[in-house]
Amino acid sequence: MKKRGLVVDVACFLFVLLFVYAAASKMLELDKFETQLGRSPVITRFSSILLWLVPGLEILLALLMFWSKTKLFALYGSFSLMVAFTAYIIVILNFSENIPCSCGGILQDMTWRQHLVFNVIFVLMAVVAVLIYPSNNKNIVAQQ
Image (cartoon, rainbow, N blue to C red; front, side, top):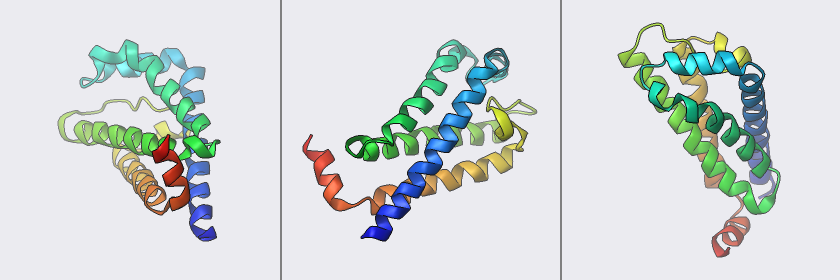
């Protein structure tokens, strides 16, 4: 049981690192992030909302990882956000050419295929963390 908790904690830690780093990178280069969102043929129409929504969700999910009462919810949210990012990458890979990544920092240096693999790893990590989440904590979350 302790090993499961450790695996969940490591997954949460990695999500916190990813989301805080990604959000900070986007916010520090907000003009660049806005331009990249505007260039995307898939999300251009929503770029003004996504400009604040994406880093805001990343920070919120990172913060929710710190409390036991919200950790499972944060893992579900992280899974959902990573699935959305992954779906976006699949659309870009299949229907677009040479679209700049709207990610920040070192993540923007990845190719789209590398980014897809990276995202799939985080999606799978979220699935594993939710599935092995200590059952006594799942009951607490379900009762609220």
